[in-house]
Amino acid sequence: MWINNILNKNRKILALSPMADMTDSPFCQIVREISGPDVVIFREMVSSEAIVRNSAKTLKMTEFNPKERPIVQQIFGADPLTMAKAAEIVMKHSNPEGIDINMGCPVYKITSNFNGCALMKDADLAGKIIKEMKQAIGDTTLSVKIRLGWNDPDEFKKFIPVIAKAGADLITIHGRTKEQGYGGTSDWKRIGEAKKIVDIPILANGDIHEPEQVSEALAITGADGVMIARGALGNPWFFKLAENFSRHPERSIAESKDPLLAISLEERKRIVLKHAKLHTEYYDLRGITTFRKHLAWYFKTNKIGENLPNLKEWRGRLVRVNSLGELEELLNEI
Ligand SMILES: Cc1cc2nc3c(=O)[nH]c(=O)nc-3n(C[C@H](O)[C@H](O)[C@H](O)COP(=O)(O)O)c2cc1C
Image 1 (tube, rainbow, N blue to C red):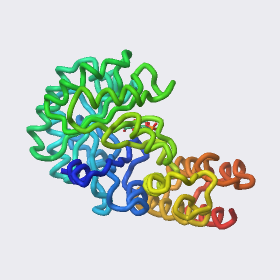
Image 2: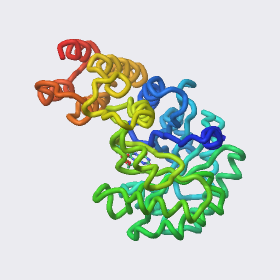
Image 3: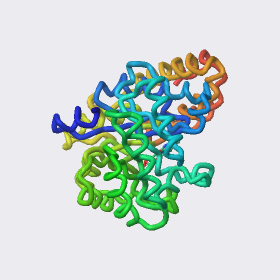
Image 4: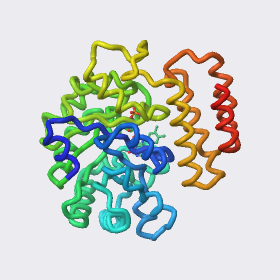
């Protein structure tokens, strides 16, 4: 079980959050290459309905390069039997280390079908989904990702005992309600309350944007680990830096030129190009257009980590590249 493999070593779990259109195989391979074997990678959500309909496109989304392991595949849906069947199919098709259930997505397209965070309004149904899925996947780890609640930030207090009793092996909590969307801040103190309610491992999620914040989030929440989403976009070094920083908390990443804590422009460019190559191999050559979203993240002011002159102009040109060759030339110019 991937959870015990980490916690039994007295270590905290560092996880890459599932992100639709972002945590695909190429990005996950890059994170794995930089971070080493310990980070747990959660792949973007896939629809249980599409899986059981045998959608080739959706099944492909669950495939991964063996280098990406340990991998957890997230599934969304609301019908217990369909969710169980989908989990079984994913296990047969791709055999990840774990399956995660999306009970936190706030997007209308998802919640209007009672998927994602809508399930937090019906703990009994959520429990049924978990029980059926557990039966379908046996010993494979089953985790659940939730928010604090639909509109009440204390809703999780009633919800998590039900899902823990149903058999969830781990719960990740994004410290916002559905109604908050991405407004306000993730309430790490409330996430900490979850630890007193259930005795299964908890991951803290939300607003851990900088590697230096990992230890602070762990201290405030008392969680068993953290799950990082936007902090890792354009910054696949996040986990490595967080580990280095936890060993050297006296140093500052922002101002440092220390190679343990600062990523040089040359290294950034090398990884951007490598990521772009993996992306275009995976999606075909037109994939460069869908890679532009990653370029925008890599060259955000707060990600680049140094005062690169004319950054805005470079970014403007980068997000218009039309080929891998054009990207390579532009990166050489920077
Ligand atoms: C582009 C994007 C896509 C996301 N897709 C998913 C998803 O597929 N499943 C999920 O549970 N959460 C998804 N999320 C939510 C994140 O996993 C995470 O819970 C949220 O962004 C808060 O964490 P952060 O502050 O570290 O970004 C997504 C977030 C972003 C920004």
